[in-house]
Length: 128
Image 1 (spheres, rainbow, N blue to C red):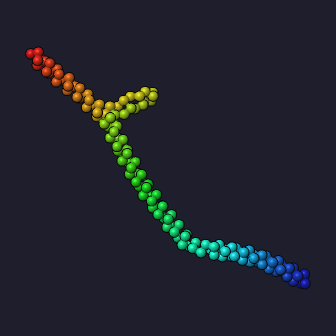
Image 2: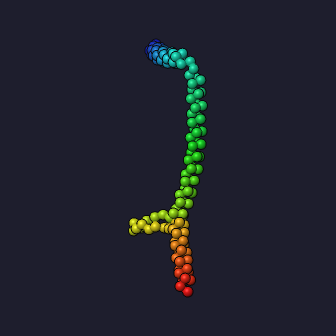
């Protein structure tokens, strides 16, 4: 029984020693925190400002993304209209490039045909 009491006492001494070490560590950390807080007393306000700034940045990023999506959509519409008017080049499976004519090309052909037809009519009319 005496050995058990001695073992228990030694165990309690070890536990107390560990407890004192941990208390010392906590005290040291608390002291560091207090020093840090005294060095930067406005840290709460600064962190709040940073948090607000981050929120505004996030809002601006979201607005920018919405604007970018709208701009990309508008650019695609303009590119489509440009291709419709001026035509474009297309590559097939054999890497052959072909020109797809646009409205401008069709208009030029129509103008040339009308001009030719008018010249033919005027020419025929003058010879009659």
